[in-house]
Image (cartoon, rainbow, N blue to C red):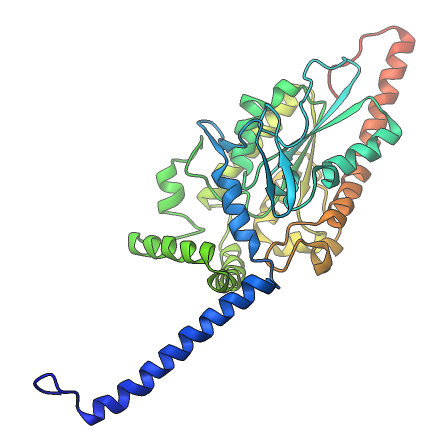
Length: 363
């Protein structure tokens, strides 16, 4: 090339290259249109979850919670919160002293993402319990992406006003992922800068923001992100160890939950969101399993079919349990919690017969 004239050789290279780029762009646009019209993978999840998190209100201790009195349609399902910022109807904290209260604490699994409130496993649990004892109230305290630290901070600063007799703690494998807002025991700078989950420089973080924006606004990019996330999550999980700072902070919070329950005579029933075999291969859930057992607690597990049957999830992208999946979870939780509550009812009946005081919590 000289004097602004493109040589035949250069033109011979540029023309097919431009043609290739044009076809690639056309193919990308067609793919985007196809995915938006058909949406075979459930890409709507990304835009809907973004709307969900944008509706949150900040909290100094536990990071964030639903806006009180919030109502919206998310992923085709009506979602409404009470004055406490929790999904469901108002909670009467001055209920009868004879009423047994079960607090279910967790993240989007407990919240019931993608299913109606009446189909969440907390409500399934309520139905099963009510067949044994109508004097039992199940309170659902689930917020999307809460982790063990935020759940502890919520329980410490607010959750105990519901006077629970029993707490079902649902633990998922991302519960050690730290939040940038809210309390922590480990300094946030260490949690994020020296993370065993991520080790990214500033440039990489900026690229990550651009990529997330693209994935949120494009179904095609979102599909690519999903495939990358599945692979990356598997690799990250293999790096988790006892020395991981994120685990140290989560473990401290878990001990805090255990201590609160012990000090208030509350039975703690932890559930790991994985099958027995799945927990053995998930390094994060395995850490929770060992620590809970060392503390004298035997965690419950979820039925394996919940993770092996694709028909029990909302979509390919969104693996949150659907209504049938929640029914299975509710049954699994009831199988553990039911006998404990029956024993409590029996103890109270015997106490009334001898004229003694009624205990305030299950012991």
